[in-house]
Length: 335
Ligand SMILES: NC(=O)c1ccc[n+]([C@@H]2O[C@H](COP(=O)([O-])OP(=O)(O)OC[C@H]3O[C@@H](n4cnc5c(N)ncnc54)[C@H](OP(=O)(O)O)[C@@H]3O)[C@@H](O)[C@H]2O)c1
Image (tube, rainbow, N blue to C red; front, side, top):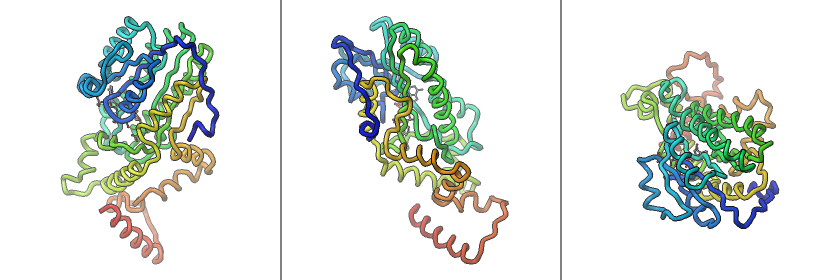
């Protein structure tokens, strides 16, 4: 939809220009769809990457050739990043388009994360991608061209409960890329943040849990914990939103291809209607009301923390009746 609203100018490239495109995290979801779409573009030289443990997926699905190369790359490891970039420069001498796609998402409230979980979240979604950018920038600057495309998220503009760390990592990426946009503009390098909202895919099955959030989520101990209700409603809500999401890995891959071909694409590219909607909602809704509105809107929020809160609550008789009716309705949705 975005391309019909904003007129993107297609880049006028030399016929012999065969850009080298490097994609991270190609073993599943958006990265996998990107690999499939990019392979059909015969004028690109591709470096499709995945961690050692998942590289087999790429080797079975794609055939290497003089323009398709499958390479191991763990975005978290500095050594792995250096090795991959060195090998690419040795073979093709350049990377024209970097697609920072690899990412993980913790499903945990902030209180139940450990330092090591926070670090892994930041290393994968922020430190790794910027580390890779740092290695590629000098060569892009030398060539006077380049595109750095990051798969960000609506979570980089709006945070959601039970996804604090994930949001923090995407906010960090968004902030750094905004600065980078200015820093690379004089050298002909474009920086883009593609922002998907809820994507109709199975990636919610791959979310990570901290030790404590796993217990709270599963309620395995049988004892209610302060965040159990919040997790239950949020997991159900996110699952449902993803099931009915506007975007799919294929539609995002299609959009990224469009961005690659575009001359000076904008920094922010919302990937579907929901991303656009949340952006305008946050921008034009009175700031003071945004969070209370979302709190009210999120399912079951009035029950979150029930049994654990010491917050004083006064409800009128009518309010209590209304609470009962809506709780019964929400319970019937969840079960
Ligand atoms: N799905 C959504 O609803 C959604 C919404 C907004 C934004 N996004 C963003 O879109 C991007 C792709 O997500 P997805 O939905 O396609 O998720 P996905 O299916 O879970 O794919 C994530 C990919 O990242 C790879 N990866 C994880 N850690 C890595 C590491 N250390 N080094 C290299 N690769 C690593 C995974 O490889 P392994 O197989 O080795 O684990 C996998 O191929 C992410 O940045 C995500 O934040 C997704």
